[in-house]
Image 1 (cartoon, rainbow, N blue to C red):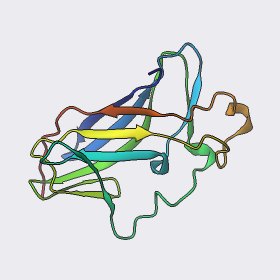
Image 2: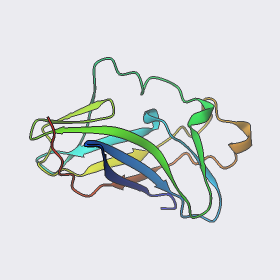
Image 3: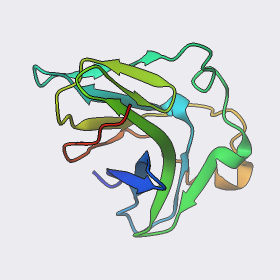
Length: 150
């Protein structure tokens, strides 16, 4: 896969974030859309299966269309951050990543992200990067996540 995703948990000032980065392993520049609508996030449950989350009440990120500022270009052999999402975990009850809630995760779950944009026309895609646009798919799985806050 020429553009794998890298997932890692970052801790700053006692807050946790899930960083989703795209690693361009090609010899050409590529453009990706850094928007929650085009990333499917799944969390490993107690049976080892990956499950989708449920939108947190009042969330609108997945329903909005991307703006021209959501498109990022990664040079050859370069890594770019697609999303930096707040991560809140309550032991054995739920994990909230960005605006999605995941119920009954494994005690140290892995997180999987899949990038897949539209195959055709993307909203607000700047003309100067249309030829380098990468529609996907790309995916990645994190190491087991072991953080708990209340």
